[in-house]
Image (cartoon, rainbow, N blue to C red; front, side):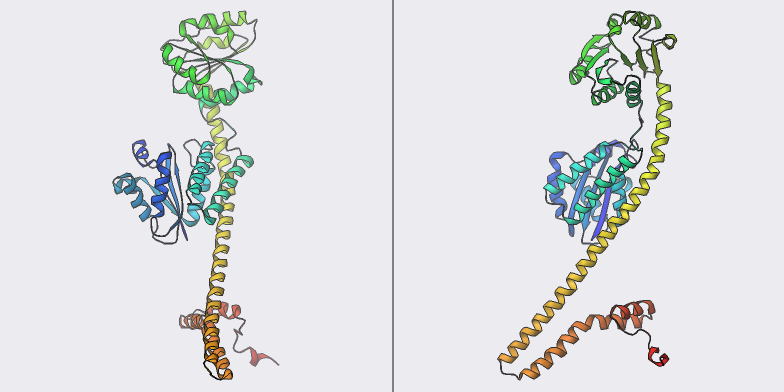
Amino acid sequence: MTLIALGINHKTAPVALREKVAFTPDSLVSALASLQQLDGVEESVIVSTCNRTEIYVNSSQSQGPAELLNWLADYHQLDQQAIINNSYAFEQGEAVRHIMRVASGLDSLILGEPQILGQIKQAYNNAKNSGMVSSDFEKLFQQTFSVAKRVRSETEIGANAVSVAYAAVQLAKHIFSALPKRSVLLVGAGETIELVAQHLKEQGVERLAVANRTVARAEALAGTLGADVMTLSQLPEHLKDFDIVISSTASQLPLIGKGMVEDALRQRRNAPMFLVDLAVPRDIEAQVNELGDAYLYTVDDLQHIVQQNMASREQAAVEAESIISSQVEAYLTWKQSRQSIDLVRQFRQRGTRQRDELVERALQQIQDGKASHEVVQELAYKLSNTLMHGTTRALREAAAQNNNALTHWLGQALELDTDPDSDKNEG
């Protein structure tokens, strides 16, 4: 059996091509059924996310990834050359290593991101429900999930923030230990604020408000968060109500000044405020940091944290690669032992079949009146010739090739004397 991985991802192809080769949840079942029609395909799993489309196949044919590449181009009605120019392929051990690296977050756009593991688990379940997973892939993917879990628990691959949005929330968590109990104001309604909001919800924060120049945009974001809405002009009136303020707008001038924060702190009776300015140009005046109970961090401060954390993740990735290497070897050893068991089974089944055929023929000869001692002699002669035919041929071929190592190994396996001069040396 040959394990093949064929893929296109954020490193090899632009989003325009990635969109074209992606599989929707509705198309996966038919795609897996189509894959099953290819010669030799025994098992298959399709992983399809916004950053990658990967096809994993266990095939009894050794045609390599070419047929898979043709299938992918035909299925999506794309130019084959475009797939060739923007794809990658791995076989056997390298394919095993690749799926384990992907599941562990080592091949992601953001090193160590955890979402990909859940996406691979879903892809595996889809394939299993479609009848495209049997013993080899069951072992491979379960071992892959185990490896990814070990990488998470035994290294720091996912411990530190590597986006400014996540870093902002993690910093707030350090300053206010009971983050879910805190009130948070989000100023702006763009992509960065949406990411911040997502991380805040994951931390259990419930008291949220969104302030934006365009109320409709604020309402659209607030609707997904269960948050209150206000306009930017309402900031001076309501700033005092929030422990945490995170801002990211496209304003060319600061929206929150030192005086506004000073008034808010006075009304809060100097209860501390944590402010994060993710905007360029700044949304919050730098002088706010001069106030004793205001803790202001800018995007530059967070970028420094992100860079330190990325370096930490890169070191963790080295440790993760070591874990993966050992597990790749473990899986390949298991697969090799399984193939050995299959060979033994085939050998014994063939011997049994040959024996039964000869015995049936001998019994028929006795029934037809042939002398039993002649039948037994003929049976013994044919049975020994039949069973020794394969090994005799192997010995002759090894000798003809002057392959002393193979000849010696076969001799030992057959418990033969591999030293013809041994008897002369005795005594």
